[in-house]
Amino acid sequence: MKFLLHFSVGAVALAAFHSSAVTGADWKPERNIEFVVGTAPGSRQDRTARVLQKIWQDMKLLPVPQAVINRPGGGGEIGWAYFTRFPGDAHYLAMASPAMISNQLLGKSKQTLADVTPLALLNAGFTTFSVRANHSLKSMDDLAQRLKKDPVSVSFGFGTSIGNALHVTGAQYGHALRLDARKMKMVVFNASAEAMTSVMGGHVDVLITSFSTIVSAVSNNQMRVLGVASPARNSAFADVPTFRESGVDLVFSNWNGVVGTKGLTTQQIAYWDSLLGKTVASPEWKATMAKDHQEAVYLPSHEMKKYMEKESEQYRAILTQLGLIK
Picture 1: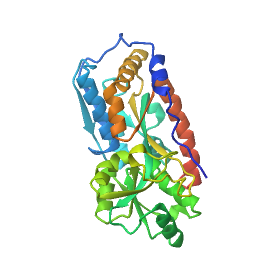
Picture 2: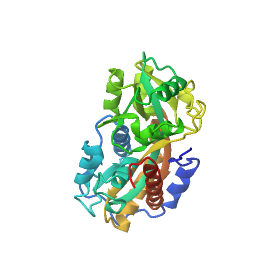
Picture 3: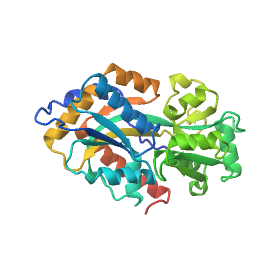
Picture 4: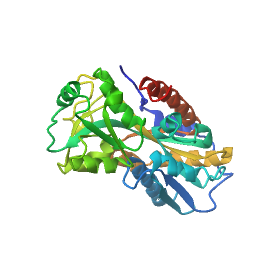
């Protein structure tokens, strides 16, 4: 069975950027901007937020100081609990990912799409399976054979919550092998970086994450990628087969976006539309996304709202199939 939770990223960026015709001149920040990240420093969301911050500073796009504030824990709930205390205040931004949607559906979070203002979709990363360099699992075929023989013989580590894109990738892989995915050993960490440390230490077998998390460890021969759930091979990891090439027709990705607090005005949304559009059109953003092995995608606020609503519908269907919700 195939599940597609990513979208085609062709020429969306330029078209979406030009669709934001309003300049937002009627509103502009008057004090410091807080950019809330519900994961630990070094995580994919954290890196994305800090790239945005650097570009804003380098290009002098914001007239006020800005700071990235990490509030990890509770599968992102600690960050959201803080962020939603400031409705209508456009001086607060937050990184969003599929975990926001899945946690709400799973009843782990009180926050819903109605509690935020979608501002932009920024990037997507296809999910990988990787192991420590000297692990006995040498290929996706090795992994499949071991799981078929004993589904609980392999442990999977990921961040940051049950039901997120990383967990769903692992569960759907098991389902494709005709296993009871609910019986697979899944270990949740506060951040992908923590999960990677556990895998490198031999405490967990397989890390589920995106290329951006593991590129340094792979380059230093500490980790080895078994496969990637992408439609085609990554040019920088040309020797890594896709799941499809390994016999499992599964394509799955994670994404990052930016949201504002609930109840932002048209003028406030227009300001961030304009600024974020300029940010993702910059050479620095495009170069960083390529270096970090993330697909640079962009949707402005009105398209991001539709995208998140569609994601919610898709996750509800998949989590129901996994027996996580009714």
